[in-house]
Image (cartoon, rainbow over all chains, first blue to last red; front, side, top):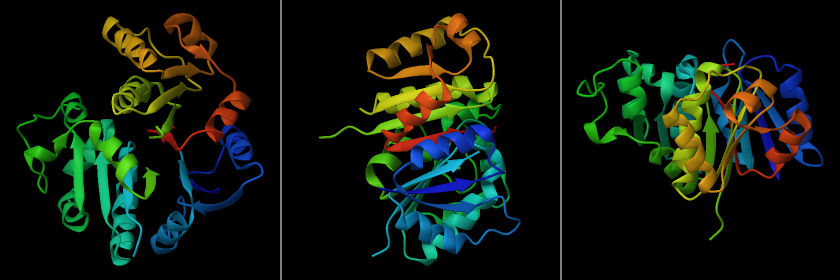
Length: 57
Length: 104
Length: 100
């Protein structure tokens, strides 16, 4: 199970805690969507490579 | 063959991401479906919304949300047909029929 | 056929009621559908929304809250962040819904 965590803003303590539990003992990757000019091409590659994508607030 | 991608949009501030991701996925040969709900139905009035409808394979909005956001349901946004003024069943289709899921 | 499990999370009270409607929409599509109201205190659910909650429960879904006031006021099921994290591990689809 490979999880991709996408962040629309800087993760707060709640999101960090949930990510920690959800990704425990699992492969994971992340993508910063709060970046001024996100590399959508790279994001789509990551989405296709993951089993589950979670786009946090 | 590229995987298919379904995008469920619940936040009106993410329209640029919806467009950027759809463009990138289509460039890879992916089939893309986008469904907008609640306040994200305001995106249907974005000047770039018809461009998204051209790019993606399917675009639909929650008609009940659209109405609750103050729009007339007879006012079908440019790029959509009345059939694409739809229900939450569209979200179910994204989950069941598409390889990859993204909420924005 | 294996039914999909979906969990919505609402951090902004302006999105909670409509988000519950989205959860109900998936339950009628034969998915196990859950929602979690986080961070903010909701208003009292009206009769229509209480009926929607009951319908969701009839279809083996539920709405939880990390906020005790929502549990007291609207009869939501209590959950804390650790329990929510564990629940999310079991989900096929996770939807951080709306604006924060």
